[in-house]
Each structure stands twice: as structure tokens, then as C-alpha cells.
Image (cartoon, rainbow, N blue to C red; front, side, top):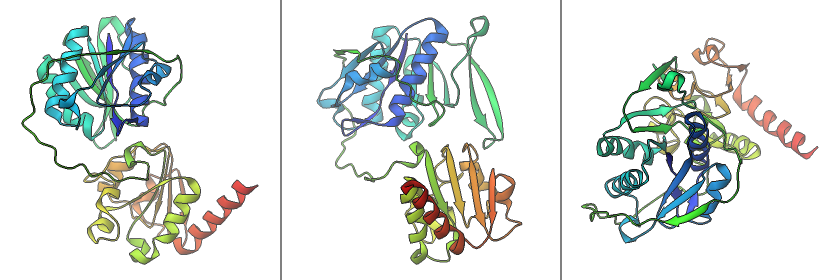
Length: 319
């Protein structure tokens, strides 16, 4: 069995949960087995996971898992995997998934690979996965020989596919020792699509000259339905909040479209965004390193181009 941990936030499933279930379903097809999902805590419309390929959903909900804590969650997921005899455990490569992967591998005596970017293969009975390495400059193929395998799936590696119907939901009771961690408060950024899940991202750097000019970036992002981001110097100067910082030392993203405005393209920034499917660079310096990584480039003053681009998109959408 392939068992997928489907994350939810405040009872609502994120896009990454549907990606993970789709990935788990495709993996189960490769292995000739079934895919099930495990959900922890209170959640709405749990049966909907069946639409994305889960044949059954196991729901763990008791007082000990009311708030996320990697100790209790890993114990609950490991207990579910052992109870069901799951051989492959799939997580999202989110902050939650990253904090769980190592603990689960240790508990299940499993081989683990984080940040997988394609459905595994099983040629000759050898389970293999691929993942980007060297800041996305190469792809590594890794064989996992352990009986149980734990992998996390990079965001936007697979698109959620609705291939089934609502699944049967079974409440699962597992023994979980009381946590030594007490969660006193949970604070989340609300109202925007999180950067790791965003399909469209508009990002800007020091070329904006100051935080007072950020309105033109937000206008472009709003008309596209995109999430805003920034380079590290911008976050360090407090022009933008640090949760928008993308790059090697910030958040690594894989959107379908990444628009970089006024960013030179240092190697540290490229390391976090070069897995984007399409990169558009707007910069007045024709020697900016970012142009070497761009699919499309515009050499022009961003204060002239960006507002005109926003208006052009508005007119296109109205038409």
C-alpha cells in the first residue's frame, strides 16, 4: 500500500495535499497496489481526497493532535503505516513534511528521500526516485532498497488530477504518547497563496529603489492573481516581510510563471527559483546575470514597463 499524509490547515486541505494524493495514486499504479490517505486533526470534506486517487481515507482525530507537533504527528502517522502495512509513505515537501520525514524514517526503519520531483519507477523491481541537486542544475536518480520507503514531493511537481470519486472514510484510533511540547499560539500569514504552492509569482529586488514603489508590483500581481516575492537584500532592508524572500537562503519555489523585476540574478537567488517552468526578467541592465536563466527578457526601465504590462493584461482580461 501507498499511504499519503494529506495536510490540512484549519480544517481545509491545501493544494499540496491534492498533489501528494495524485502523486501517491500514480505511485500505487506503478507498484500495482492501492493508495490510501491519512488525515490528522479536524478537517472538512475528508472524503474529497478520493477524487484525487485515494481509495480510502483514514482519519485520526483526538485531543493529542489538536495542534501540529512533529513528535505526535510522526508517531500517529508511523502507527497508521504499521497498522496498514504501508510500504511507501508520501508527504508534501512543505515545512510540515520536512519536519516529519526524518522522524518517520527513523521510526519505520525506512529509506527516505526529500524533495522528489517525479513519479517513482520500479524497473526490475528496483524502486527509484529523482530529485534536483546542485541548486537545480542536475537531477539525481536514487534507488531506495529498504522495505519501507518515505518520500516527500516537491510542490508543483505533479498537477492535482481528479480521477475518482469521494472515498470511504474510516476513523482510526492509534496510541499516541502525550507530547512534551505545549503549543501556546499558532500565527499564520492569511489571505495569500503560500509561495511554495503558488503557480504565478511576481518578484522584485533593489531595482525598485524603495518600499514606497512596491505598489506597481502588487498591481501586477493582483491582475495576474499571483503571489508577491522579493530578493534577500529587499527583505534584509525591511522593504518587504521575510516570508516573501525567495532564494537559496529563503524559500525555494517552482511556479509555472516567475516574473523577476529589478533583480540582478545572483546565484543565491537563482538557486531558489530556477526550477520555475517559465522565467520572465525585466531589468534595464542588459548584462544582468538573470537574463542567462530567463525564458523571456525585457531590457527596459521597470517603472515604464511594469505599469504598461499591468494595463495590457487588464485590457486583455476585459476583452
